[in-house]
Length: 204
Length: 139
Figure 1 (cartoon, rainbow over the protein chains, first blue to last red):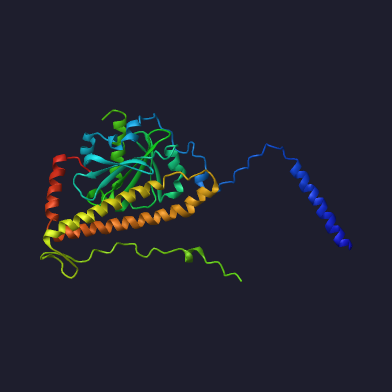
Figure 2 (tube, chains in turn blue, cyan):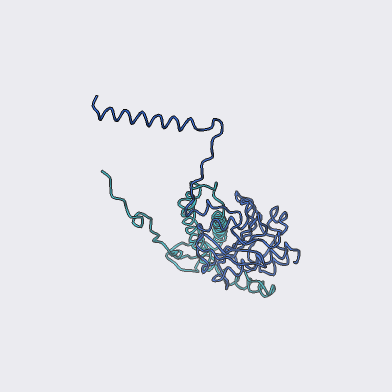
């Protein structure tokens, strides 16, 4: 056996002992929890506990989540320029309501409580990287953010998220294909969101 | 032998259709523009209804796709966050963009059909009448 070969075997033996002793030092039956990998720039992995401004006072949301079409009173619907009781639907993200414009066949408004999320507007803040624009605002004193995956506000699409409790946010979006607000659709979403908060507060 | 890595910008698909093409010429009876599609006056409303149904569905899909962007990733760890940001997010944006263009095309097509069938003037009059009655409508 050459000196080199003997050295290699010796080193391997030392290494084996080191590995075995390392294994034997673990406490049986008490596995340690791996440290989570750093998220780096991944905002989705960040804690969403309180990223958004706090809701000043939680609004009652039972009726809203049961039937989003109840978010606006008939008088508010008419005043805004919508028509009908709204069309309620339920999909994999939660319930939603669609109202049509009273005057244009191409204009619609959607109101959707995001029951699939559990951290209200903070979950929307955590998803900031998914949006083409992200502009925090306040609606009737409640925290909101204009945010949508595509930027088409000059073409009639606007999306506004409003925190109504710390656990629930509501998406108010519109598609204005016709009329003077086609180039300013966020005016409509703001008006609808304001009316919704007023109605939930029992003011209208 | 390994091939040299492609630059990201060269490998990424390029969006070449950024505007919606206008609808083909439409003729209803003797109205409208010849050289494209021709409909009989008693049939055109059924065609318009079908396009309006399609428009409704596309608008609902747009609203749904917009909301998906706000859904939290399945778990608070790197794989889920990375999947959403690198895969689902960009795919969803492309899908949404295509839907918005399809919606615009459908709206233009419906307008062309209504224009050729002489419905537009009546619709505008009706709309103005309703708006005047309501006073404050903004939608």
